Image 1 (tube, one colour):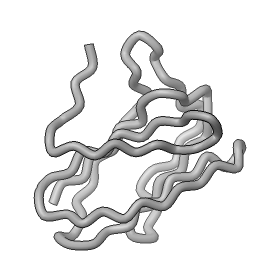
Image 2 (image 1 turned 180 degrees about the horizontal axis):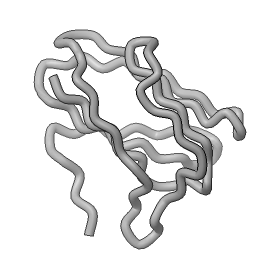
Image 3 (image 1 turned 180 degrees about the vertical axis):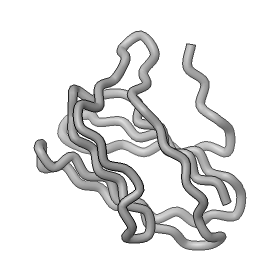
Image 4 (image 1 turned 30 degrees about the horizontal axis):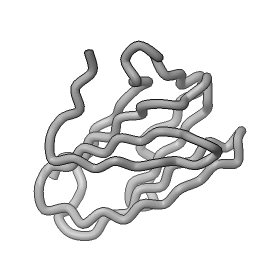
Length: 98
């Protein structure tokens, strides 16, 4: 199944690490939100049907979040940083940026 993760609001030139089921799927320095769009970057991965674990870390800011997803259809996950925490928003549809 498709898992698309969009890094959305609150990224300020951060190093971001994303692990999917304990395997590193994304690592990038300098991730920054385009304020007019509310979008910074994205990644896509195939995941198994059923339970999956997503871990997001901003190591330089000591921010970490673990999210469990039960996947039965393609999943679109929007991640934002606010007040030192990662907020997740799950959708069955692609996020649109204008």
